[in-house]
Length: 279
Image (cartoon, rainbow, N blue to C red; front, side, top):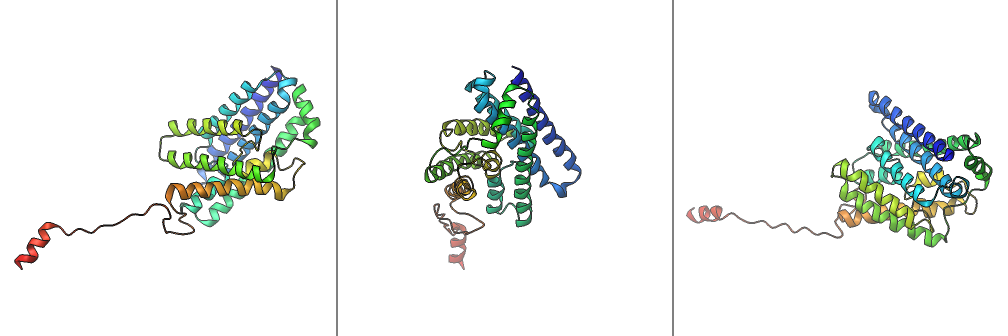
């Protein structure tokens, strides 16, 4: 249990960091894009530790799959509560841009902040593993230079896995975005946990370019371009398909509705006809 206690302490540190940044930036709304930095840092940093428990914890710390699924769900639920509107996901930032809800500069700054947060989270996790506080972390530190890639299938299979999972996720997200956070946040956490588990033998269904960058892009086995096709192009394609299915079009690209046609009918009130006859 010492390994789990150390991991819980690490999770708590990431949560406190994200909450502190969120509290500080309330005074400076101009730097609100930095909320995405804190959100991405928390998400990637915590998920790296979950990945450690999955890879090493079962035989080094006696932590089974039920523990990792529970921790992942609690992580996603806590992330949704603490970070609020800051998703830490470039796809959701791009979605707002395509829906004309955000302009170009804030979108670019938010995406850059997300990737910066992911990179620094990877560095922080590597430093934490280097402390070797438990046997689990000592083994992870030895394995860090030769980590296992999350992409376990061909590029084509990986692309379609990420695309389909992103399509499902964004359709649900678009349907729930007007609902109360009490309903939306738990349902999104359940969905992300479920998709991650069923796709664990394929791509792990990250559906988040900055998350994938922090978790698996540094692992050998595939080139940067190959990872980008699966974990960047796949989720973006799924997101755009979801937007078309939900709205019928992509407002930023074209205004014509491809799926839903609205017929406008003009009816002349009966009173107007009577007045014309009298005249």
